[in-house]
Amino acid sequence: MISANIENELVRMLTKFNFNTAKGHLEQAIENHSIGNWAGANGQFRTYMESLLIEISNKLIPSRTCTNIGDAINWLSNPAILSPVLLHKNLNEVPETGLNFPYVNGLWKRLHPTGSHPGLSDEEDSTFRYHTLIVFTRYLLSRIESRV
Image (cartoon, rainbow, N blue to C red; front, side, top):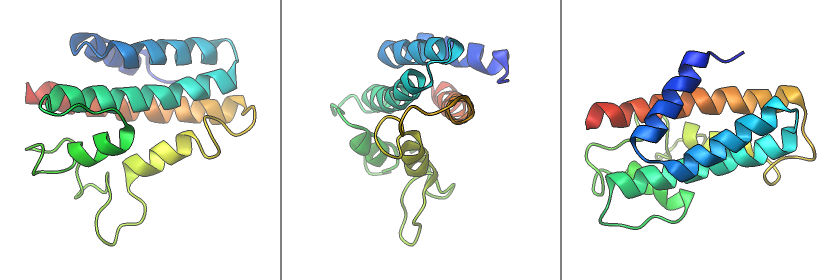
């Protein structure tokens, strides 16, 4: 099972940066996961990631209003918009010429291969999404924390 420390640290950082919408989606996802509502958890994990990247973009780039995950990924990785960038091409996190499978875009697609969830899902798939997303987003928020 995922380390309680990672989850607690993630919640602490979400609270610190006032990413309340993302935090609400994460709490609903965890609650759904804990009661075995895999489809509900998966839908909220996807919405959590989307909300978090939008909220991060709006925090770090207050001169722009981000409303979708595509813009968030593009803006957070564009040095002409945000310097230093938060999402890095050299770490294969975002699209780069010749790179067909960037991590952030791949994770986003993995969270909803055919919509918010493929069918009703199962515990193993939902737990994979949960663990992967918690670890990555805690790491991402630690980057923000080191910036401010």
